[in-house]
Length: 238
Image 1: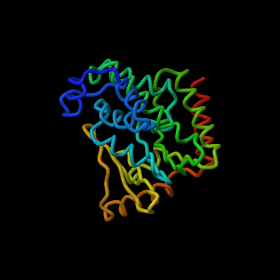
Image 2 (image 1 turned 180 degrees about the horizontal axis):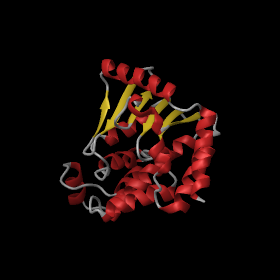
Image 3 (image 1 turned 90 degrees about the horizontal axis):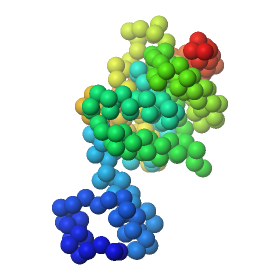
Image 4 (image 1 turned 135 degrees about the horizontal axis):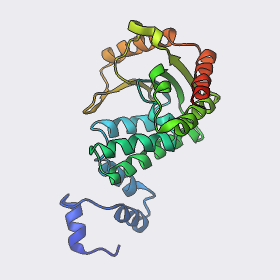
């Protein structure tokens, strides 16, 4: 492999973290595809919100995604410019480093590629109106983001609804929520607080979320009016 016995020993004992180059070289030597690279990615996700890597693993395997986004457009739908504007703001606040921001953006791009794969999941997203009216990254970046939402809504496996402000107290969720339909037909839930994310497996809790999501779909605008809402928001920017 071209590494010293001492370094290999440190990595094997968990006393030193492997690098991306090390993981790629290991896969090459042992002809293991991307096995060690994938393991390295799990280790190297320290910049991600606590609990999110576990969710990301489930997201990569799910057959169906139902999302509710509050204040920000869900990551899977974000354009590079929109995502970069959010990451840059977090760096400026001193929460993460620029290197960590770059890692987050690369990881987001890898997640988004599944939407363009051969067997993408069915996605139903309800976006709170505030997601569309909060201008992230300036008018140009936000305009591109809204146009991207229109393009996504045209895909047969993606449905987008808008929950207008008029829903008021009937909005069932106070935090972003995701429901994941897994290959074994089980359903997992995911939500985030400021400090961490949590993958919910308790089926009693998930069933409640499922029922609340059904209510959310009924309160939100239908598909065509939702698309028109997004178009108007984009036109107002220009």
